[in-house]
Length: 262
Image 1 (cartoon, rainbow, N blue to C red):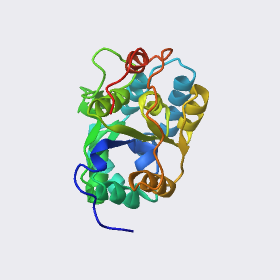
Image 2 (image 1 turned 180 degrees about the vertical axis):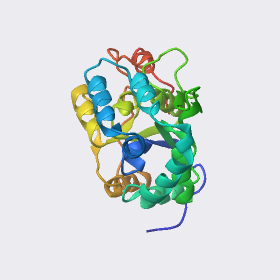
Image 3 (image 1 turned 45 degrees about the vertical axis):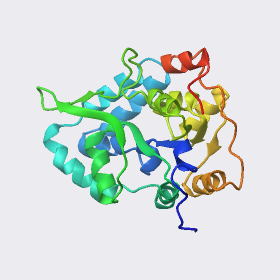
Image 4 (image 1 turned 90 degrees about the horizontal axis):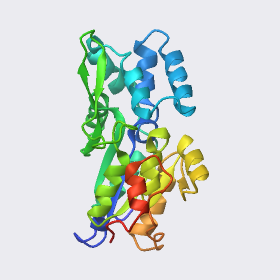
C-alpha cells in the first residue's frame, strides 16, 4: 500500500465516514454480550425486546432503556474488563482505519451503545476516534439508566440521532459514508450518500429502496473506498437524501428540499 498521504485539502476533507459500533466496528453486539453475561436470563429478555421492536410495539429508545436497565452499576468494572478481554474488532478494521487516516478522512463512531464500554475497546486498540454515543447514570435501585446527549431535540424514536450526525457532516460540505448493521442504523442509511450494510440493515435498505454495498468483514469496504479516494473509480453521485414517508424528522426534512451539499 502506498503510505504517502495526500496533500491536505485535496481529497479527505471532502468525505466523512461514520461507523456504527455494536455489530459493525465491534464483531458482536457488545450490549447483548454484556446482558447475556451479567444478567440472569439476559439473552432471553433481549430476544423478547428485539421481537417487540421488530413488531413495532416499542421504539428503539424504549428497547434500549429496558435492556440497559437490566445492568447494575456495581458490575461496571467487571463489564469493562470483559470488553477489554473478550470483544474483538471486525476483521479488516485496522486496514480500513489506516486508509481513512492516510487520506485524512474525518471518521467517527456513532453508536446507540454506551460510552463506558466503547471507550475501553478503542483505547485497547490505540484508536483515537471521536465517539457519539449514549451514556449512562445510576438509578436509585443501582441499575443503569440511559441518557441521550446526542438525541434529536424533539424526536424520541432513537437514543442517538444518527441521521442528525450524518446531516451535520453533509452540512460541513462532505460526502457522507455510513457503515452499519441493524435497526438503529436505518435512519442514518436514509440520509447518507453512501451506505455499507450488513445483517439487518441490508434487509431495511432493500425494503426502503436504498442503494447499499454489502459487507461482512471490512476488506471489501477498504478496497472500494481506496478506488474512490485514489481516483481509480468515480464515486456514485450524491443522492437526494431523505424519505418523505419516514418516521425520522431529519429524513423527512431532507426529502423536502436540497441538503447542504458539496
